[in-house]
Length: 174
Image (cartoon, rainbow, N blue to C red; front, top):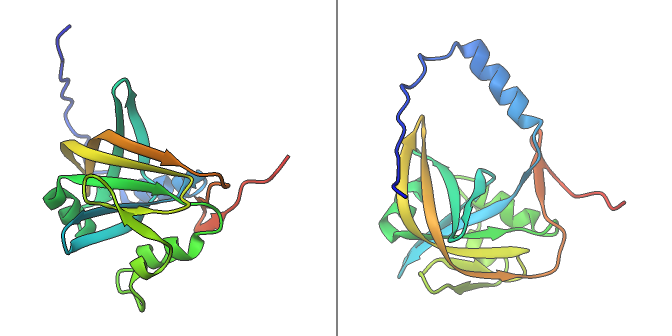
């Protein structure tokens, strides 16, 4: 079997009205909240992210989308690896700290962190941690899509933190 790449021309620029409607619709979609981290020695950082999905299960791979203007985008590219730390509904303070461009306190002071095999910080008690080695970077619109091979995973019990319509949310028990 051979790999095939299909290229389709980018659409013409959308009207501002359509972009606003798209953003409004996306705010109605609940997403899991994770901290995407990177690290190489003293050069480490992270960002709160909801644009994450599985790309493949065999072999395991994840996709993470990061805004090109974010310092985390360049940090991830420099490191060549990243970790995805899915938060519990009790870790919203950590999500807030990593979502602010200028933090009052260092975000790594919140929670218990260790260093993964690829150098990225790993958050203890996250519902799931995925350590990834970058395979591809794809520029799309104002974002970079990082596709990473998963090289290590760990899980812990807890209810997943969600984000919808500008607020952190909890899953309701049935």
